[in-house]
Length: 488
Image 1 (cartoon, rainbow, N blue to C red):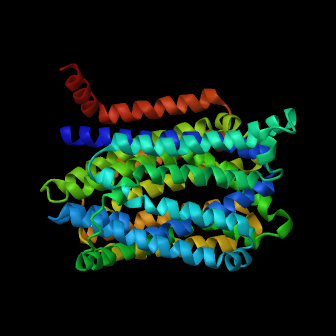
Image 2: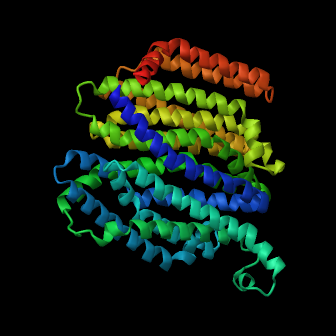
Image 3: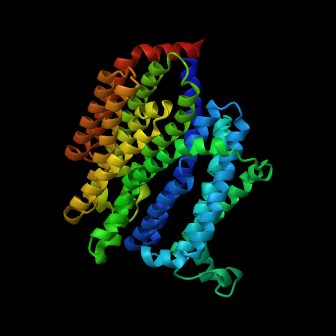
């Protein structure tokens, strides 16, 4: 039980580092949707979608490779130095080339050159802190990691509120004041990116001692091994980015120009209601990856992974049902402009899709442990093919609802493929009967609550309580053991 307690503690702290920043970002959603027309919010969403792709490319699997080799190599300092030097020079090269060709990128993407410049700087600054953050996780310093992550988003939030809310008020009250001389009218999107740049720059400054005190000793042989391990992860990451973000880009391309950006805007806003499952999945992933690698040599590792996966599904099923029952309350908190609510019907699909992705993360441990990361790339590519095919097929007739269906189909397929291949290469004794019963009952209750008794909270809460009793009934023995240990 001590093993799981340690995992839970680390996941809780990483969860804090994920939940609080995301919650701060959450506060920006009503700010953006109140101040920006749907088309303008759609434009911001499209730019952020492209940023996800370049984040993956600039990391090129080095983060996962870092954890793999940090746990397997005797010379851990060499792993840190080699990965940091690699990321540093590839990032500097990207920065130089991208700034040189920013006008070409602007013409190709249809995005204003000024926003392209801001995006390039954000991408570069974020790439430079990939290994310093990974180092904190490897050294098991989750509190330091959490403080820096939270600080980054807090700065972004404060600056966004200042730029978008308070500066216009100050300018109106004092047209000849100091703020008026700095303020640019109709520059809302620019201020969103400027806040991001400043936050990313401060984060880099805080972590820059890792570069200042680096020995800059590069191990070419180790680097080649890390690249061989990491590049398939990058391919998988690109495929994941397609699954996660390309729907917004395709909506802008496949729908009529006069409605495209507005449709992206309402879809992106309601997509944010899936945040609670994203938070759970992301926090868990941050804690579980170092855990999986550090316990790979244990003889009971397969049983440990099976147990961890079962409890992930239990908590995930409860979160999914809770969010779907109360989705129409959350929309009042997050999306104050009711014109965005037209896309609420995608929320259950997006939450279930992210749940499937979280289960896939658990199931995918096998190909990382046996150094067959290329299989993960193949699975992600299969998901990307499904995403692209269904988006091209469904968007012209179903708009963003087709995109939500495509996302669910892609992640569900990836989950199933990983499960069947894992049984072949690295059998893990999952309790499939219990996992299936928790997930199946949660989906069934969610469908009843959202599609039959939507906003009827008597029914919704009753279903939630029934599901909680189902968990207690099945896991009573374990829960009682935990309670008794706490008493002791």
